[in-house]
Length: 156
Image (cartoon, rainbow, N blue to C red; front, side, top):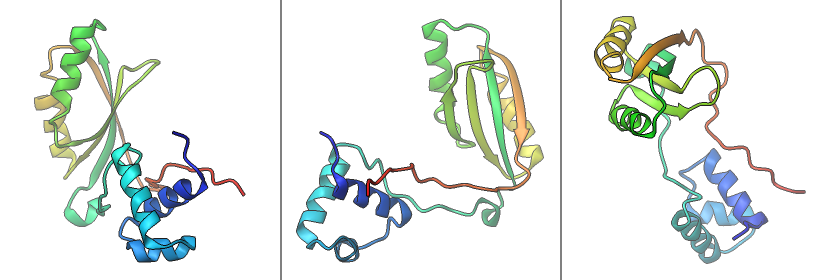
């Protein structure tokens, strides 16, 4: 089903503030609560809305290191790719994992307390995986833009 303008406006509003009440959201759209509620339930059921989260300031909880790790595999056979993906999923340090096209096979976004924790993560968790050929790391110096909202075009 193609989303209409109201659906797009709801998604956009919830991306900006997931704590909006139905009353606030409905009022901002000039609608009553019931149709907004029904649309949100539909968007959730159809997985347009994956989940609701709180965005935590990583530095305030002691996560000083944010890095990107590129991973190159030794083999690109389906069972080896599936094995890597299965092994990386439970790693709590990995915030995001992307299967890439180009010079690397995977790009991991890794968040840890400090450089020692990162070194232990690479040596004890990544490097011990059977199919790893190379790991290259890039460390974030400063968070310039960290928007989590998916760009939604809302026609005029």
